[in-house]
Each structure stands twice: as C-alpha cells, then as structure tokens.
Length: 226
Image (cartoon, rainbow, N blue to C red; front, side):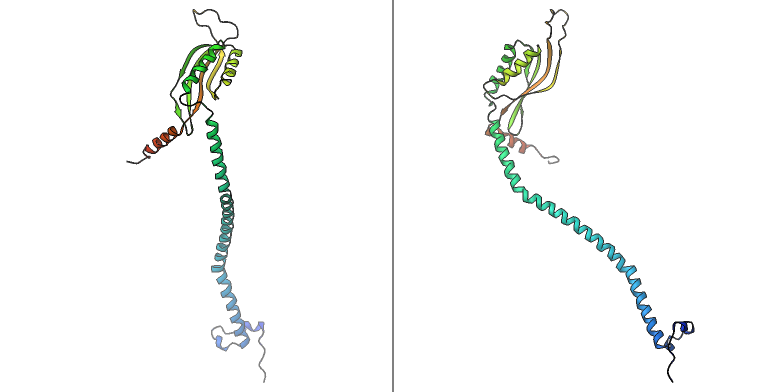
C-alpha cells in the first residue's frame, strides 16, 4: 500500500514532541527552514556589520588613494621648484649687489640730505637710526621732519632716484599735511607742507657679514634649552 503524500495542510497534525515520527518530506522541509533561519541570523548579526565595515574601508581606501596621488604630484614637481628657487635666490643676490655697500652707506645718507636741501626743502630733522640686518641685505631707517611744497617733494624723490648709485627708498608712517605756522614764526609761503615720518634705504651685505649673521643666529640658545 503506497504512503500518503505529505501536504502543507498536514502541518497542524505534526507532533512537535516526536519529530522522529514526522514524514520524510516534513523533516526535509524543517531542515531547509532551519538552514535558512541560521543564514538569516548570521547575516544579521555578523555579515551586516562586516558589510558596513567594508564600505568604510573602501571609502578610506579611496581617500588614501587621492592623497597619495596628490603627494605624488607634489613630489614630481619638487625638484623643478627647488631649481627655480635657487635661480631666484641667485637673481636676488645679483640685484642686491647693485645696492650700496657698507662703506658707501655714509656717503649715500649725506647725498640724500643734500638732495633735499638742493630742492629748497627745509629739513628740521634728518636722523639715521640703528641699522637692521636681514638675510641678504640691511635696512637703514631715517627719521624725517621736512617742510616744502608739493613740487619740492616731487623733485626730492626724483633727485634721489637719479643718484649715481642704485637707491631703494621706502616711506613708512608718513604724514603730509599743510604746515602750521608756530607762534612767533614769520608767515609761511602758500602751499607749504609738513612731512613727518621714516624713510628706509637699503644696502647689500657682503659674504663676511652674511656668515657672521648666520653664526650669530646659531649661537642664540633654543627656547627651553639650558
């Protein structure tokens, strides 16, 4: 006599306390459901977390790849940039060599003062300050108080620019306003301006001065050193 085929409607008739007596089809179906349940639980508790971790690692990999490409591009341009910087430093040194030397600086200061006098400017103060050394040059500040017309100041600047030696002169904290007559002074001609401030002129440092300046920097104790 043939066995009766197992149907889904027969599930309610199964004895869950005696699974060994279940029909073969029911046992196979239960095993399949158990495997599916284990896979789903494994994916939920293990694989889903690993998936998120994998996505994070992939994003980090892309960021690192972009960073590597950027740094590789910088490294490829490093040597040309170093060569360009060395060339610019050489050009700067050559340009600075056209400035006055240490021995010419006193005469240059006198020439600037005499140029102002030659244009008719009244110089009340012309006081050179302490020289300040830089990497390849030194700057000489000069405090000024002068009275003159607009055109006289223009001729003064033009006269300094036409001196035999190359002169770089910059103006700092300059005040230019109509000159006020002090009590007891004679009346001023119309258009007289009062100039107050500081000009800076520059000279180049020779090799010995640059070397001495470098040694002085090295001799300065580092912060926190004893």
